[in-house]
Image 1 (cartoon, one colour):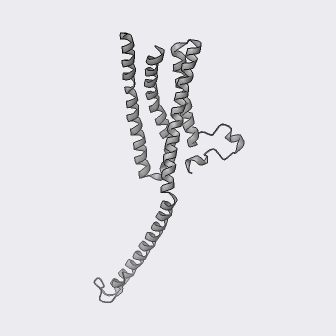
Image 2 (cartoon, one colour):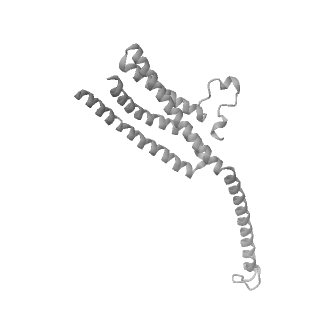
Image 3 (cartoon, helix red, strand yellow):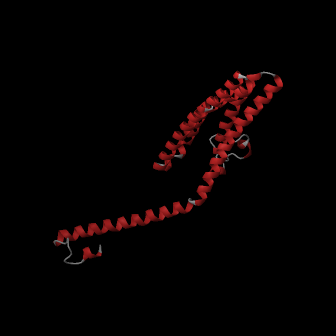
Length: 75
Length: 135
């Protein structure tokens, strides 16, 4: 029973990593929006890099979600 | 600027002042023309955007995030189901969750037009950056 409790606690702690991904995504999209408001004509050209940064940042959040799901269902 | 042309105006000092006033008038006329052009262009741009653009932005944001999350969730469910069926307990979830993440990113790239839709090259050659992004 104690291992069961530790599993749930570990899954909850692993989900804290998604908060870090959220901070990173906020930084990325906020900076993109600030730059796009300064120079709207150059915003469309950087959209691919925005999506690339979004994917790389979100991947780390997905990894922590993966750890949480593994702890909940697969261990 | 009409007061400057009157004789005995505040900054009129002989012939030199006359040419100075003429230059100032032409500068003033050019500035007014520029103001009118800028105003016309600005009203044209705001008339094109505003409320319709707002709604399209919300729709685009909701669409992109839901497509990404749908890819991840479908990957996780597929991996969990394959694990339960085949008994390969952690590995199906790991592999299919990462594959679902990749599919979500690919969904986003497709819906923004950075990557062509599958089969769009055969159907219509110029439909790569489709009509869903408002451009």
